[in-house]
Amino acid sequence: MDNLGSLNAFVQAAEARSFTAAGKQLGVSSSAIGKAVARLEDRLGVRLFHRSTRTVTLTPEGTLFLERCRRIFCEIEQAEMELSQTRSAPRGKLRVSLPLVGMLMMPTLSAFMRAWPEIELDLDFTDRLVDVIDEGFDAVIRTGEASDSRLMTRVLGSFTYRLVGVPEYFAAHGIPEKPADLATHRCLRHRYPSTGKLEDWPLSVRRGATAPDLPTAATSSAIEPLVYMAERGLGIACLPDFAVREQIKAGTLISVMDSALTHSGTFRILWPSSRQLSPKIRIFVDFMAEHLFTRPVSEECGSTT
Image 1 (cartoon, one colour):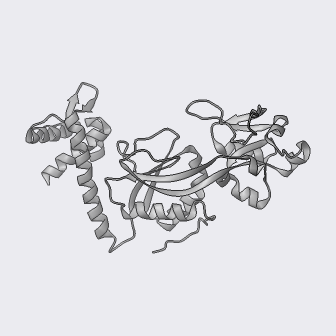
Image 2 (cartoon, rainbow, N blue to C red):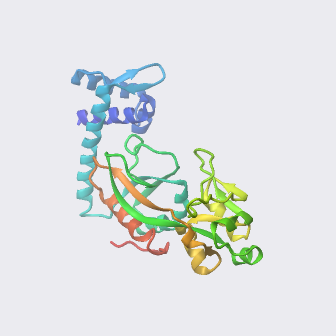
């Protein structure tokens, strides 16, 4: 058990890059963490950290050992989970990274919380490329292809883009029928927060033709303000269909030029391949895959247990 305690101290210090932060996490002093790591290094006969007055960084041997230790603790966690399944509903913290557009997933996430109240969601919204393993996430949701061989993945669903506006706007400005018509409309544009560049609208133009210059009425680094402005007749927005599905169904927003939009995307959930799919992750993956794109889900949804 002392060996496991030393391993845990090492893992916490390696992930936090700080003996002080690791001590706070484990409820002990930084010196206790340092002594536990020193005993571990003596027993192994290798140096696990480069130490300075301000930071600690892993040696190559420490990096290799950290991955092995993570596997050990994941196996322990899995064993505990398998035993707990026989007596209770899945429980514990589930740390998930989502893109900024993930705010639009909140109805489904809220329904999940009501269905599985023993699981604590720790949600991190960002468009940056996170390191799932090094940053300690249980799962991440992202668009595009999965390229990290250390991760397992499952498709949650696909989406297309829609050009939308309110009926009153189109009554006043006319309904565009081809990309060139957009040159006379007020366009609500998305700006990538990481680069500051405007997102191009995925318009299909004839060979030899150029995409129209879009008159920009407003820009936003998030999707929700664009939905809000479009709903109030301030222009046309190009948005993923899941962001405006309910408005289109209700008729508060109208979709135009559907055949002129070419791009589609895929949402995936990813988790470390070194971990078996724990019950809480399995339930989360299944719930999101079932409800995120197929149909609206009530926040009053009950547990299936």
